[in-house]
Image (cartoon, rainbow, N blue to C red):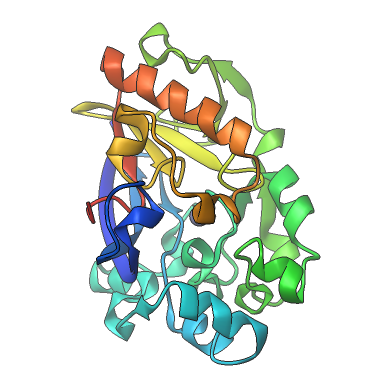
Length: 268
Ligand SMILES: [Zn+2]
């Protein structure tokens, strides 16, 4: 069985009503989580959270708007690489880093993990990799966070075996099987929030956990099927797909097939 260790690598603040209409204008704290998934066969890092590179890359120019819109609080000891080190682990101990999507708060630690294979949505990477300036900002993509020689570390999950999911995970029916994880780490497409947005079902001793990344920002989004504000829709890749994904999370939650963990939940 797999274990999941939760890291909080900094947080940002924005008004509660951004993620849930009616939640008010009070600034809420949205932790940027990363997860260490360990099985007897390997060790994977799911996303990276913030890192000092985010502050460096958004200090001025067009990307300073990113920080203005979502003020970031980050301490160097919260960097995922530092938290791995505190557990006696180095980048080379990871089988892969898996990116749920390419928003800055999910990839900022990549420069601290150079040389580690990076699994991501090939379609998402193809749609994002050449974006620069305002076009990148509108997709919350900060090109400066991508390390040199990143392309040589990239492995598209679309190349993995596609398998049928157990009936208890309905309405989710298919996933990409993570190589070397013995069926305990299954990567699923959760489209809408960003190009190629991914989640993962992880088999733990307490049952299935769905790392749902940013498919919702707070459990109320899928429990009550209320999407975020119109303003939050402006960075969304595909609003119709987002609401379809939200609906599937709702059904999964109602049936109790898996516990759903969201990257930023906890503020509301
Ligand atoms: Zn995101």
